[in-house]
Length: 402
Image (cartoon, rainbow, N blue to C red; front, side, top):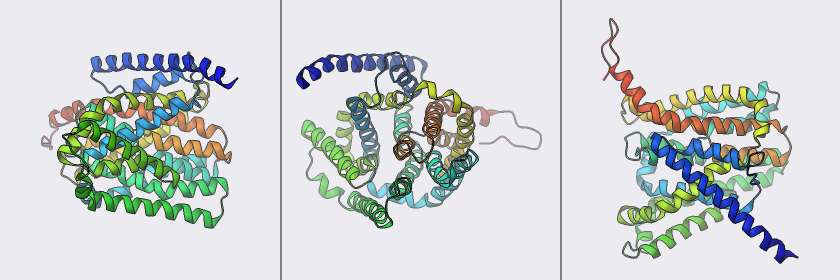
């Protein structure tokens, strides 16, 4: 009987989810004691709890995957609440050159490796996208953990992330068309729809924030919480229906709010964001079968090493546009190093299409786990390394850098 099956599965679901939250809570305490970001520990916990792990929570579990998606939406919503639409557009204009450098430096290594592994030009396009796109979710979490949100280089980094996410708007429909063999007309419609959605949301974020504020009142925090959270989820759902990134839609909703309204919304949403974001990062590991990793670990690690270096170059370009210090450029590079949600989405599209071999998904999983773990750790040590570099004794013929 369906009712009996549902009743029997509900206690098991509560048990699995409760154990997952307990484990993540313990890891958060450990990370706090070590003064590091908990993100790498969350990823490892996902391997422990997922398929092939000790607990065996299936990646297809609709409840866990839905909670993880809500975590992405909240991460990007609160990141948007940190900035105004006008401020972001102005900064993004200054970062247009960095955005071009970002594509060249970070997409080419992935494309080259795909060709070397015999995955063809479609594999090159797919893996180039994986290595190009940084994880907005991980970056926003690390900036919050390390209290870097108001550093000079943070705004350029966020602008680079937004440029990357906007590039995904036409990229994902194009990749889907190539993987599924959809007709040219359908593909053009998908790409055109995505671009129209991007334009409309940006115009609303820049021009409509004052009118939107009139609908909200910081004196009613509960109502404000429900309206903002509901608007972000609704925008994410609408964006998904037209093949646009739900996370970017939530980010643009956050841009609508500034001042006291944004501050109240952040305070109310912070605790919920922390819980859902932890599940989101753990879900990365849950979706990976540990048994698939050893065969692809070495090439994935080598590619991760190269593309972490290219992201540091991207961070240097971005940070120098605002006259950042050497320490700031290191912080920017470390922030951009992690790959995450979009890379996993690309691997998912490839897996469904069956155009590329199964090794592609395992390769991407290993690559994402390495970079998503390395990024927060590099961020943790970026400042000590920068201070050491500035304070090192000068060699003959060289003055001490300031």
